[in-house]
Image 1 (cartoon, rainbow, N blue to C red):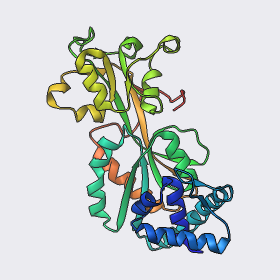
Image 2 (image 1 turned 90 degrees about the horizontal axis):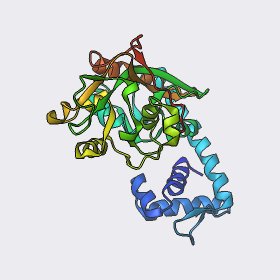
Image 3 (image 1 turned 180 degrees about the horizontal axis):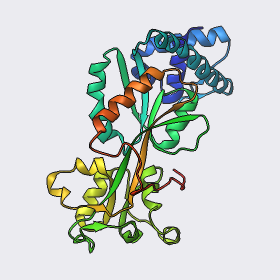
Image 4 (image 1 turned 30 degrees about the vertical axis):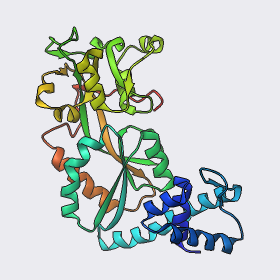
Length: 315
């Protein structure tokens, strides 16, 4: 039994397809299949039901996959211990990032970080909050960039910054002429939201009257902030955006951005990791890198003039 065989098993279990698993593992499909067959022969069991489409785990295969995750997680710790002792930042660092954080924050720090630490290979995966938490717990990612607090006992949170929220109100909307808006002005009837599962959707909903939310059927939602801006421009309503996303809008759209009066709705973005994570040097370096770029653009510390829309709704 080898670690690479276990990695191939996890790849097939994830993608439910030998060809796709081989592609994601950067090997040929015959090589991957042969290694898995060797493992099955050694264990004298079938890990996958190859007659099903897509391929599924057998009953014993599910147990083997769970054990393989634990073995690989512990094996990776050995390398982490050695690198930490040497003060080296090298190898793969897998980071799960929220969809509303990835397109604005990652391009800001990615290239600079890679230049500063050329032996560190950042692997970025777009994930929802619950996926980040689960992946940190099972060891399939090393870190996450998420909106906090998460209220997870085993997850460590290192606050990076506090990002204000802004309203995007097109000329067709009655509130467009207002210089600023208040959270009390938000009418759920006219707000375009991200679809279920996005924590930023919950941030926005938590600014509105809970009684109104429960009675309202939201007919238009999307998984993409740019789509919400487009729908807003076409007259379907207003929307709410994170500040960094609003700053990336085309110049002709920025005139539709309205800032909130104090207290400003603000989300807390943090680097998160499991308490068993041993890669502390990386955590410290990434925090310094991100805050160095963000400094001057956004709040690094919370002040009395902001409010945080807590993630009290599922998501």
